[in-house]
Image 1 (cartoon, rainbow, N blue to C red):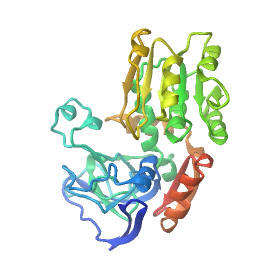
Image 2 (cartoon, rainbow, N blue to C red; image 1 turned 180 degrees about the vertical axis):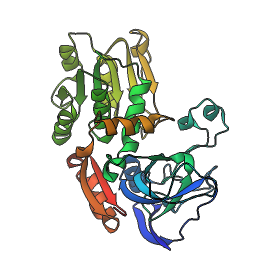
Image 3 (cartoon, rainbow, N blue to C red; image 1 turned 90 degrees about the vertical axis):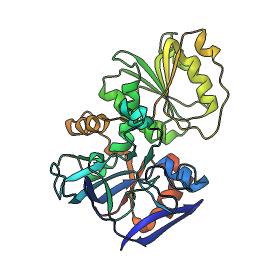
Image 4 (cartoon, one colour; image 1 turned 30 degrees about the vertical axis):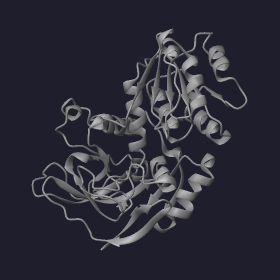
Length: 354
């Protein structure tokens, strides 16, 4: 038996003893080391089940209670009999997307848009908040010795931001607005700095998060409760607005301002997962020929690019880690800390087996 943190329902997570999974062909068994607590985990805790299936998932066949944790690093413990290109003891990160590989999106290479997609740690196949889990060989990526296991647990959220920048039309010399200074917004700042961005503006309510944004390389920070975001952006950008904006906040008022803050033929990139439908005026795009695109998680190649960027020093995300806790402290010092004192934290890591 092994320990695993399982989601049973709204505000009902339990550290339980469950069976150790068996490693089969095409699979690897991983011993998780560090696991990041994600905003998705908090949404499930506060209001779930939302993404966690209450009926059998179409790929995993599993439904709650399910093991949590989809941002994590670990060590290979066992490999399937047909797995020859990775060995026991190697340090890895897990790319958690679950996809069928046969739908139109998957055939086009867009595994993040799979018609039946899910995530390890949300939809089944175990999760990082357990002592062992088994995943497909294709889901694990080796990290070099220069990348710590703690930083390895940041690869997943960094890949979300890296993919968003890849999908955007950003090029060096462009001005950029980021809505939200949470973990994803700050990861976007870092991804842009790594690409040579020279005019990054972050709009964030919380003072501590504005400090984080500056420390990670933002050139300007705006408190939207005290300043007019559109007026300030136009002031910074010589009256023309930004070339690209990234919405990592998912707030109606922020979206309304961001659209107007984007210059004609500029682009607003939506990363945020919205909790409810919103109002939206397409004319705000049409009459200025603005673009509005959505991005979802990451695709093949994004994890490798992030790992290489960390190893080369392009990305230096260590200071995103604001606390490390043990498995038996998750609810009080992890989930509740992020809910009740989120402005003081970026990423809380759980030490499963450091």
